[in-house]
Length: 190
Image 1 (cartoon, one colour):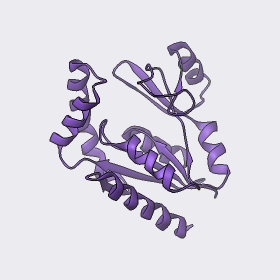
Image 2: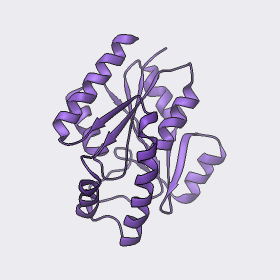
Image 3: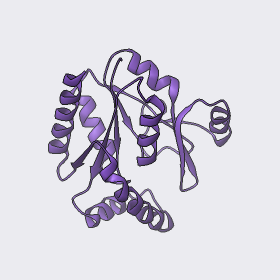
């Protein structure tokens, strides 16, 4: 069994991306999986760094070829994780970080089964009000998309107890430190 796969999940706006950036800055042994999406890049996002930005046609072709470990549609856009990309990183015997939605985390655990360890970590906001404020501050969603995201949050919260760990993101540095501790704990079990 090579590198452990750590799925960082939670509702949109909870700070997954910020925490993952901190993890990568603080631990150079980690490998980051880059997901695919059909949504347009947000300001500052780069192809191959934040996402592989694909057209709907390119995404569908990869889907038809069975290239995705998991995929999902959110608000009219597709998101997916390439099997070959994650496996290649894990084969380097480094802990692999996947910033992934709740359903994707479960699919990753199911796909790898006994061939790899997959550890699912749910990131929780201090409160739903804080989460709502973060989404508004981000300013990247329309009012309709915000309503849809609120509905999705209820589903995601209902799945949290199925995760291996739940980490409260009340302060990015503290949450990052807790996850680094989880990574060390899980590595020592191997």
